[in-house]
Length: 225
Length: 122
Image (tube, rainbow over all chains, first blue to last red):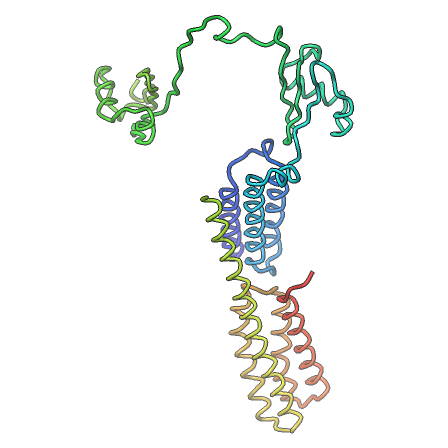
């Protein structure tokens, strides 16, 4: 029983390590090779857990080798476009200048129903509104609407659009987040003076966000309200 | 770059594990085969006392070896070799020629399987 606990813990650590080394991605964003590796790792990790007679090292070694293959392949894909093309494939234009490319649809074995489904997932219900639709290598459909149907942006209304800045959490649960403070370009003293001006103690702050333009938002802990 | 370094470390680690496993298995199995052969020669020469001593020492050695081999080799295979090794001394005591010879042969074959498992194959 103890060995089961130990083996499970070791395999868990190895799988986490493997996933971290491979990089963070959601399943839907994975390239085909990454998806294959992820499925293989989960399968291989299960073998030493199910069968106590299998040496733990066999599973660990297999996971290591898969991670190495994935890293080598991703580096090669990055450096050599042909490798990337062979491993991941190419994005395919399904709708070009408002016309469905039926050959392309046959090539990717996509039915009209699937195309309509993917369009609806992008909040497009009328095919005549689409100028271009591209099927990405991860199976996602990206749509460019015709100019007359494209949503208006601030730039369409005015030439002068103020640049926005990203608010970051500078205090979380009463504790200052130094990396966020550095990114925003301020100091702990300045943040304290902002809080002092509002008669708030830093320890009472549940969350304080601040952007590079000085806009802040303070949420107090429940027991201090 | 970090990922490449991680891959490099994993490659080195994997090679190290493979070499260690191969060396360990080769070393332990060679000792086992030699002891079984010695035991068989002594038995055939009717030096039963010496043969019994060799079989007892062989069992003790194997128990030690087994533990370190658990890291690299299938546990079931090691346990089956262990069972055969422990039978060897009983057959020497009983002077059971047929059983002794067949058991020592089974050990040799099982060890060969073990070595084959660790060598490169498709």
